Image 1 (cartoon, helix red, strand yellow):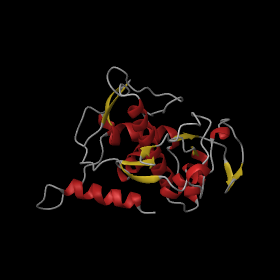
Image 2 (cartoon, one colour):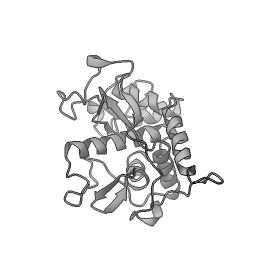
Image 3 (cartoon, one colour):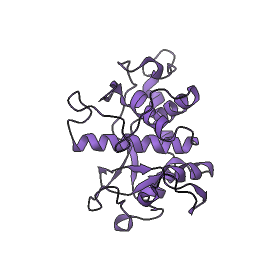
Image 4 (cartoon, one colour):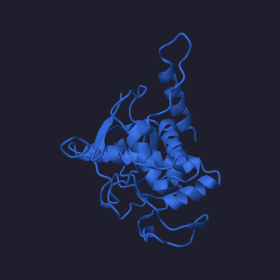
Length: 234
């Protein structure tokens, strides 16, 4: 299944246009594991928002690039674009749930880290929204005041600076996500995705051609299944 969303800049495919553009804008220079964590958070956030508001992401109510929602980057460097695309493809279709429901996958820059849980400069003044839920489950998971704290799907808020530090110190992306959103979040596929098909996305964001299995038309599906399995590897 191919998911497309209307933005104020056009109709884009979720996996090879919208998600990588947001990843590039939000955390483009981060280590690979942080990029993958960000891709899953971006995807979960927008799909949950579209679930709550069925008009969002349609021509009637296109998604805009905004700090109050998600910022997307139209013209990142070549390296940033390639890394963001890879993070989106590697985690294609993977989302976060708790108790069977998509969570509100809030994230902010947060303070810079000088070490694990050793905070430095809070240059963006967003550390107040960050939650530290490593090892916590159920009611012990702290919601973030950036959203309604009474919503059961409010499972916290990720620090992008924290995610980058953890990734640079050998944390994998599922560990990073559970560090901020709780140990009991389910990280898995929304649906079984088919290979993305060409669509009206900007040509500079076209995903790389995927290799075909000799004598078979299912090569892309096999590759996506393998990528999904890798993305779920703890």
